[in-house]
Length: 384
Image 1 (cartoon, rainbow, N blue to C red):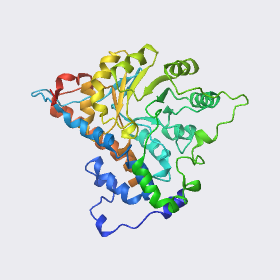
Image 2 (tube, helix red, strand yellow):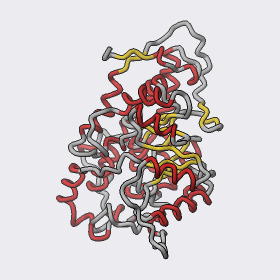
Image 3 (cartoon, helix red, strand yellow):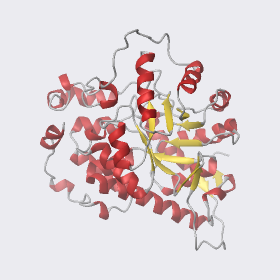
Image 4 (cartoon, helix red, strand yellow):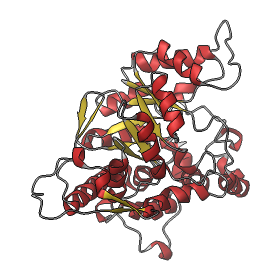
């Protein structure tokens, strides 16, 4: 993949002259997006950038933040600002974490090793995808400590259990079970690009099929066929969540919860954390932004578990709003991948730096000295 990736790069045109040429030149995380687009092969960019159907929910994720205004307080001593949070008994310097994104080597030859080193350098929580292009053991070594692991269940419970035991043996403290893709998805935009670039895609993927080519997915291609098959009957339900709880000693989060009802069921079924997500607008085309799901999920959780959320986060103000509405931690996905595709590890580090700096700025501007004090009293709902 690395050779094919390198050969696919095209020289910058005069139209690209306004693109930043180093990570240090970025003024916002959005500066990395056009650079990534210019550097990546078209099919790789399409997979990263497009959403389900025609991308309506992906856009809604971003636009959803515009619904909320920030109520700033004045004459508060803001000389010191504490951005730290508590998550499962551990203190993190920032509520910003790196959401699971598959196939980092699709965007940079160093892939997950570069993002893990950036997470280590900037002390951020990292969640690793099942479809990683680097093994969990190597990612943990680069990170300097075990990451969290995101789970796509297999069709055979024996393989799922094998995967779980490997991740647990690697020391991962938390498992993030993704449930927002169980109904499938329609990647119309990506498929249109694939139709036009299939010959080129053969250079990277077996038979030109990036979604079924698992040669570069070490967590999947190492799975053995069980001597006694245990095929799943039907799709996962809350009974499956109970089975996961009974199998692992890790903390268990369910990723894809967007309603109060399911938040309540998650707590009833022993989930340790609730993760609000619609897969970055790449799952169901509900047109419902994840930021607008936070208040009702928080009501369902009622303080009994941490709440994580991702989807459309691009600014420190977005992070502030999510915390004010009830989130414990806030994830970013595409922005750090733009940084990776643009400038490797340094790009990822700069994305994290910018978001942290912007969060600190809006906290000072709003008269908030600690993330613990960011509550609904700092939010005005424009819809009311």
